[in-house]
Length: 427
Image: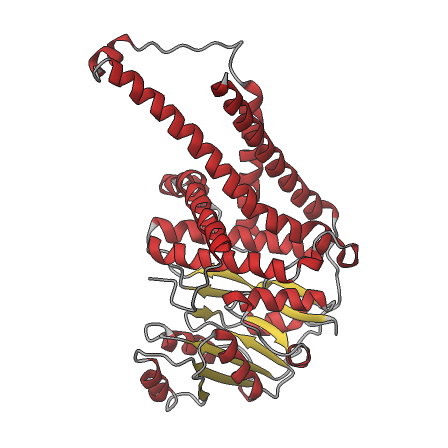
């Protein structure tokens, strides 16, 4: 009887997860189809002065390529200022910056206080342009990106504009899956942007109004996710964040599992703590869809991931336990099992409802993936390439369990009040 009860509970949990997945997918489609873009007139040819701040810690392998991409920008050079802020690096980054400063005329600053927010604030003190951008020193910007993104500031209420962020030259399966995930996230941000519901301004090339950020007190530590905290503060003060579809930046993603887990743990841990700090958003009509729908959804995603992975793991371990127990009773006579195995399929007892629901959900996900490729100007012919089959298989199976493990790790951190540090995530 106990076994039947726990299986029924597990089935209810799985159906709840199915329902939530379908609900959010259909919601995104309804916003995409029925919510019209706000066709605000752009200031064509608008090229105000802008400062690009590059905070860095131990970026000896990428900083030169990053700066080269900055100085190749298709933007008036007399309106572009570059500030490199070394956040107390202990590798060759300071020496490389000193050498590059002879090639390019940028302001080289050193911030001894550890933390990306401190590096950004030091750069902000030396900024006198109406706009500034944060560019991580392991990211590379396309020539027209800044010129295109600055046009989105066509309303005094726009506090920040975010780019299309892609993984730079993915080499292994983990990086290719992150490449796919980044494209999908941009698609989601584009949809959420229709409802003014963007909740993060990523480090690789987000552009801000200088006076707005100064008025809000500059950057905060934000639980090591200062870009998310800043976005929440902008939303809290009724400033809009827009997603550009014409500004591209490429960033180096973790290629090893250890670095990936460390990065995502920091991101998601910071997300929960920032939501806790801004809990007044939750279900608050004052913030419209952002408070009523989006922030609760962000919080719910982690909780459901933990519940889902624990449920599936329990069912898997339980089934394995009884299989091993049955084999033990027959002294692990595998030959007998194989010879007596019969495949049985009963149309009447088959769970057609689960198959139908899963198929619909998978179809919606693939439509979202396809639209993400189209919206971010990525090649769609990979759907015809068999080698990408393994990327999708990894994404839908291995990656889901990996993300569940990370959320469980985050949950443990929250329970033990464990912190973290600003360290490299792409090892």
